[in-house]
Length: 121
Image 1 (cartoon, rainbow, N blue to C red):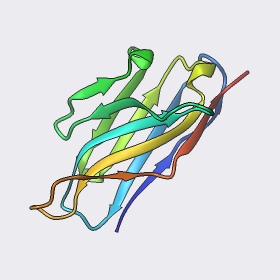
Image 2 (image 1 turned 90 degrees about the vertical axis):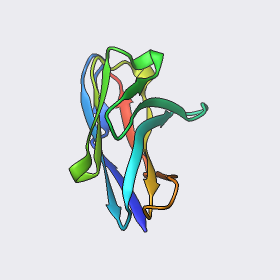
Image 3 (image 1 turned 180 degrees about the horizontal axis):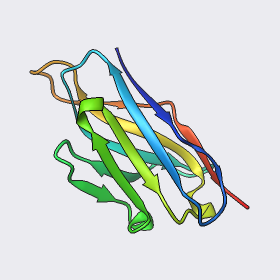
Image 4 (image 1 turned 30 degrees about the horizontal axis):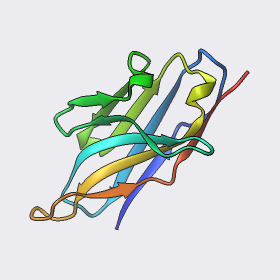
């Protein structure tokens, strides 16, 4: 059983910052790529940022220069630092991890329950 639990969402004013965290727990061999996705009302879920186990990062164009993804492999945790937030960043943010349960298993996707980020004055 693998669980991903997000924290750090909330209400922030435009121009403000938030830091999201996501920690994986349970029995598994390794977590490969981890990422953050978001889904705004009436829109499809979209990739915000991802980071490989070796810390190669990838960002959506809409967040480049404002958001920063990082991870701590020893803690099985991924972070998303969000700066210069705008109302367009309002969404439910989901953590994703590619988890190998055993050394011989290919990674499969696991998702957190989501955390609400609201940017409003």
